[in-house]
Structures are given as C-alpha cells and as structure tokens.
Image 1 (cartoon, one colour):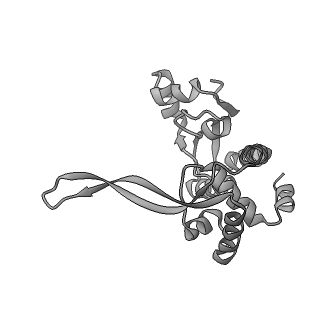
Image 2 (cartoon, helix red, strand yellow; image 1 turned 120 degrees about the vertical axis):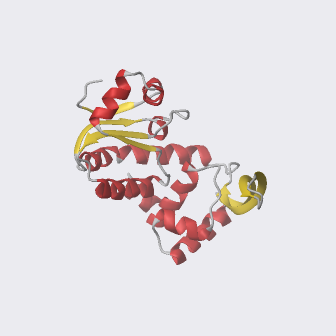
Length: 207
C-alpha cells in the first residue's frame, strides 16, 4: 500500500509529510522538525511543504501553550506562550478520504511491524491499542512484554515505525515477572489498556 501511495502522490517524502499532519491534526511543526520527524532532506521537505500549503492541506497557524517559568525566589509560575508553525487545515475538503486512505496503509504494514518487534528478544506479549485501534483514551499505543530485550535494537525499530506512521507512539515495556505481578494485582494502567479496544498481536502468556 505504501508503494501505491507513493506512486499516487508522486513522492515518498510527500506521503510521509501528509501522514505526519493527518496523524497529528492538533500539532504545529516547523520545517526543520518536519524534515527530522519524516527523515527526509530539508530541501525536499521545504519543496513538499510549499506544495501542500498551496493546495490548502496545511497552513500557518498560531497556538497558545502553557509553559512553566521558575522565578528567582524559587516559585513556579505558569505562563501562556504563543507559538507559530504549520498545521493541518481541518477545512480541507478531502480530509476524511485522506485519513481513511492513510489508515488503510498503516494497517497493511502491521505484519512487518510485529515481525520486527518479535526479533528484539524473548517477546511474550504484544498489545496494540490507542492509535492502532482508534481507542483515543487508552494509556498506551503499544505494550510489549518480554525478557532479554535488546533495547538498542528495540529503539531503532520503534523509531522506524514512528517515521512510517508519522506519529510518536506511547510505548510501554515490561519484563515478564513485573507484568504478571501487575496483572495479578489488577494494576490500573494495565487494566485500562485491556479495558479499551486492543489487539493481542502476540500472546504467549495466554492472558
């Protein structure tokens, strides 16, 4: 599906940038950040950003965010700060079909993603929730349980997945002993994941 999207939209970089904005509709980005998150050349990023701005999919926006300032007397003060950047134009007429198209492309790559996660050690359990199941209130997108996990390899795989998705994932890792203890104690975090829509992509623990 990704190959088809690249041919349809004319550029692998364009597909990555469109996906970044569709998966993060409330966020603002600057050009340098888009280049880094999508792992594409800065000149290519600027060219694609210009095109997407001209057709109206993205536009310049201003937003207010809460910042914390530490005063000289040691006290903490909350202050509103205005930021500017590029964001998704929710009024773009093709937003809905674009989202459906890109979500389908993500699900197509799920098998390869799971295969990569299984390769990082003695993996016992992989649960997909949040982003992958459209469970907006789930505390995690991805939960992995396993032993002798090669963390550098896992980090590389997660970064690759995030680049492909155009979204940073809420990820949690447990070893088997800790997970089973928490599960037996009805840990709130784990129960919340299991109570929301989820998919057990691997379940050697048979929970």
